[in-house]
Amino acid sequence: MASKERPPLRVVISDPKAKGDVIRVKVRGVQDIPYSDSMRKSKEQERVELPLAKVSKGMFERLGLGEVGVMTLRFKVEGRKAKIPFRVEVSDSVPEGEVWVSEALLLEAIGSSEGEAEAFRAMSWQVAVGDDVATRIAGLEIGDYVDGSLVGLKGLRLKVAGGVDATGIPMHPGVPGTGRWSILLSGPPGFKPRREGERVRKSVRGRMIPDPRAERRKTSLAQLNLVIAYEG
Image 1 (cartoon, helix red, strand yellow):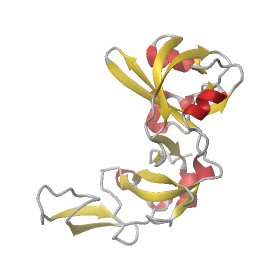
Image 2 (cartoon, rainbow, N blue to C red):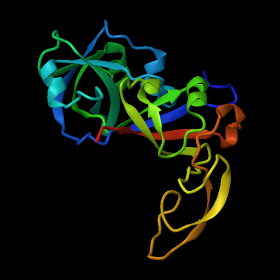
Image 3 (cartoon, rainbow, N blue to C red):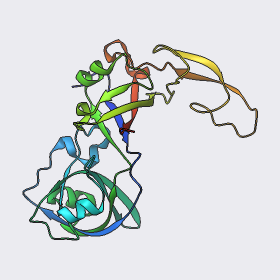
């Protein structure tokens, strides 16, 4: 668990193979799919695991979920869109064209036990990790690799792509260590020039993931960005 002095570290995982192909589906809420506080959409900043969805084998293959098994459902609720990522299991009980999720989750998300949504392979999603995981990856740098099992992706490798602290200051691949520095930037991360040759002095963090036990709440690393690294 995270220290009472710091919120849990948010890990944003990106899937470079997700192409955004969309399938319109009927979503049905069922009572026998578990839904706990650790999955709750209303507590997204502290969600430690993705909720479960069940689909047919054909739907699983059409969405191309083989490597990762993570899908996003996009609902339209009162004129706005709500996106929820799910880890996906194949079930012979689910009819083609349907997705089964927890009834409690669906009631919370759209106010009904049935609805329609757009389904697609998740391009990115977020989970929170406690100090036990954050301590294990401390010392790794941008460009290093993380065992995917630490964030529920067994058998995959994830590449450290960057991150930001609680005040929005980004990690920078050109700066060693974990400290904060003020450096002259001519481009991302940390600065997007509006004209050619523009440079500005900005605060950045070093490229190394810090040990959470040595960080203060106000300046602790708040978000770590990881990208799934496929062979080849």
